[in-house]
Figure 1: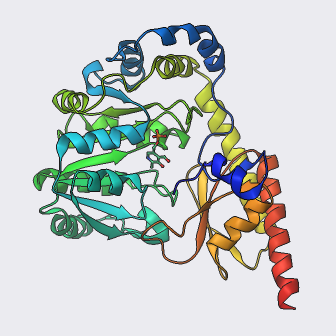
Figure 2: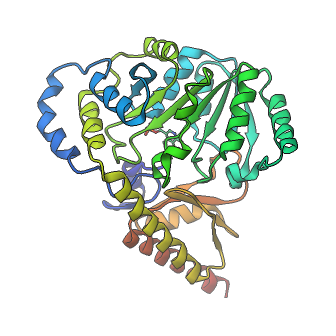
Figure 3: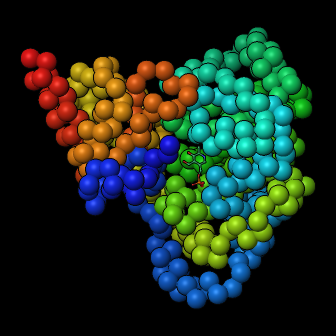
Length: 372
Ligand SMILES: Cc1ncc(COP(=O)(O)O)c(C=O)c1O
C-alpha cells in the first residue's frame, strides 16, 4: 500500500539491495551526531520514555518559536493522524484527492463519512489563484459550499503525491472559511523542510490566530528516521491535551526522543541537504529532458519527489520492470483521484537518478524493439 517496503521487495524481486525511490526519504541523512547519540543512549532503553518528551519539545519550542504547550510529539506523523481522529471523533471529513491514504483510514477507523474533493495529478496547481477581491470571494464561496457540514478538512502541502504547494492566499481563505463553518483544518506539512524557505510555507504562524488549526509535521523524511519514527503536531494546548489522553502515553520511545534532539542540534544540516537535493533534482530533470523519452512525462515538483506519467502502458508493469532491475518506485494506481497511469519517484543521489534514467531508457527501447 505504501512505498518503502523493502522487505516485500526482497521477496518479490530476489535482490538484497535496492535503489529505493518509492519512499520520499532524504538520502543525505540522518544528520551527523544522530547515530553516535543513539549508540551512546542505547542503555536508556531499560527505562520508560518521558511521556511528555519535555527535552525535545523544549528544543522545538525554541526552534519553531512556539509555546511549549502547543507542541506534542508522536511515533511518526502517521500515529498522530490516528490519535487526532480518535480524540476528535468527527462525523464528516473532507479529503482532497489524491492524498496520503492514512487520512482516509484514520477517518474511517472512527466511523467518519469521507467526502472526496478531486485535485487530480496537478494537485494544488489545479485550484484557481484568487488574485482580485472578486476572485477571492468566488474561491471562498465555493469552499463555503464544500465545507459546510464538514468537521475536518485535511490539507497537505507540500502535497503527496503531486509535489505541489497550496498558495498562501488560497490557504488563508480556506482557513478563514473553515473557521466560519466550524470546521477544523488538519494541515499536514510533513515535507515542508524540503522547501528552500520552509518558514514561509509552514502553517505554524497561523496557530496564534486560528483555534481551528492543527499542524502535523514529520521528522522521518527530512531527518531520515522512518525506521525510528518521529513526528509532531502543533495546535491549541487544550486540543493537544485531548490528543494525549486518547493514546498510549509512551508512544515516542527513548531513542526516537534522543535522535530528535541530536538531529535538531545540527545547525547546518538543513541548508546543506536542501542545496544537495536541489542539485540532484536539477540533474534528474535536465538529464530526463535530454533523453527525449517518448513514453514518460515528468511533472514539475517543489520537493523531493515527483510524478512520472506514462503515455502508454500500465504503471504496475513499469513498477515491476524497474523492481526487477533493483529500482523501487511507488506505483500510483491505488492513489484514489489520480487519473491516468503514473508512478511517484523520490529524488535521491545523482548516481541513483542516473541508474533510474538508464533503466527507463532500456525499458523504452525494449518496448520499441518489441513493437517493431
Ligand atoms: C503526507 C504524509 N504525511 C504523513 C506521513 C507519515 O509520516 P511518518 O513517517 O512521520 O509517520 C507520510 C508518510 O509517507 C506522508 O506522506
